Amino acid sequence: MSEPIATAAAAHHRRLFFLCLLRLLVPRVKANIEVRESNAILTITLSRPERHNILDLETRKEILRVLESHESRREIRCLLLTARGDAFSAGADIRYLLSLDNKTSRKYARFVRSFLTYVESYPKPVVGAVNGTAVGGGLELLLVLDIVVASSEARFGQTELNVGLIPGGGGSQRLPRLIGVRKAKEMIYTGGLLSAEEALRLGLVNIVVEKERLMEEALSVCERVKSKSPMALKLAKRAINSALSMSLQDGLAFKSELYSKILSSRDAKEGLRAFLEKRQPQYIGDGIG
Image 1 (tube, rainbow, N blue to C red):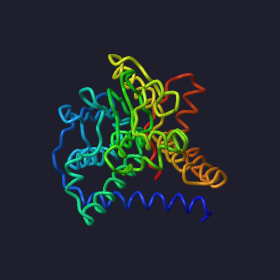
Image 2 (image 1 turned 120 degrees about the vertical axis):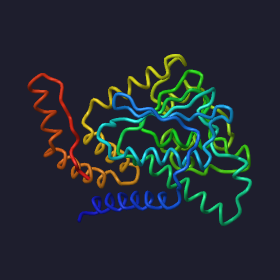
Image 3 (image 1 turned 90 degrees about the vertical axis):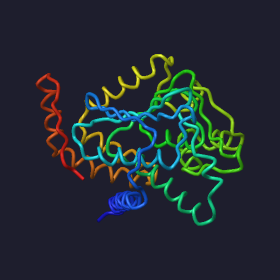
């Protein structure tokens, strides 16, 4: 097995390990989210606006349970994550963090890392619709999504240093890769907030619209995404994500392996025929692992 393929295989095994770990740690409890399925789009809404949609343990566990239960469902082509109220999410539950000791702190840190790794490597596209402020762990959740649409009123901050902490869910690693080291240091060191327009300029979000058009635009993105081959989306996501942890040459070799797989897939044949026949393709999603 070549080195890039072995690296990708190791990453896949790590994802399975994280999923197994999460299944062991996470009871199936009800938290404050809403789930709606419509037209092949699954919408998960953080629904505790009175507490700024904090991502406490119960909320993270419920998100995980929903994602797990829909991971292999072919009829779901795209996920949309949004929130009610004026805040997308204020991040972790500060009161819970105060209760942690050395042992429980380690367990909690492992859980947060595993949760975000699972969301980041989810085989279906995940779109975020940011209605308001996203700070701390709320921003870290956005960092692992595929595409982010923001309201013009949204604000973004990696604010943990304001309360004597450092980013606990990968913000210190993912944020510099996304917006550059110097700007990430500024955001983390000062704990300040970015406007939606500045977040767009830096590449932290993809699209900014007026608040009343947020869900319309986010659903439009989902519609465009879900019209593509599920298998192509899955492999494209895997290839792009791997680029962050591989050298260029290893990434190119890994991409070639994925490309050779999809060339022989039913979805690829359908897409090519549909193009030649000037019709819309009817993708079904091949069972490529």
